[in-house]
Image (tube, rainbow, N blue to C red; front, side, top):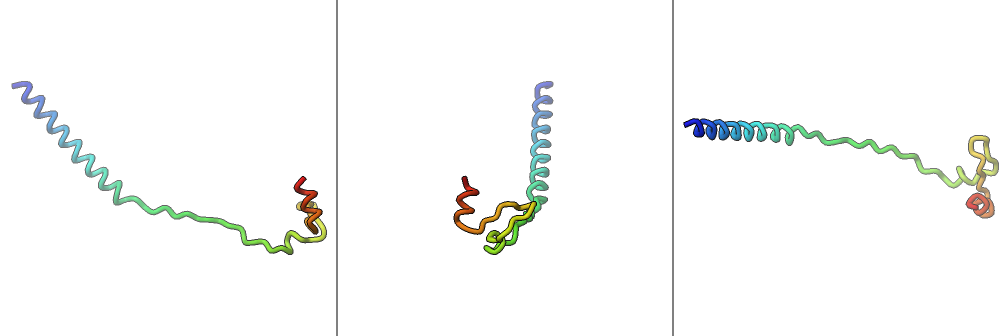
Length: 74
């Protein structure tokens, strides 16, 4: 008699667990919001930006010719 009650209690606990699991999964699936990704990008630089004739203190590298480019790459 006591074992029947134990099995009955185990069955009811399993059923309760299944119901709770279904409810949790239901809310998890339908409450998913799409993530919005913000992509920041730099505007393209033109050739005149890099082909200047004089460097500044902030940007001392001047690429005025192929020789300058080779010198900077070494």
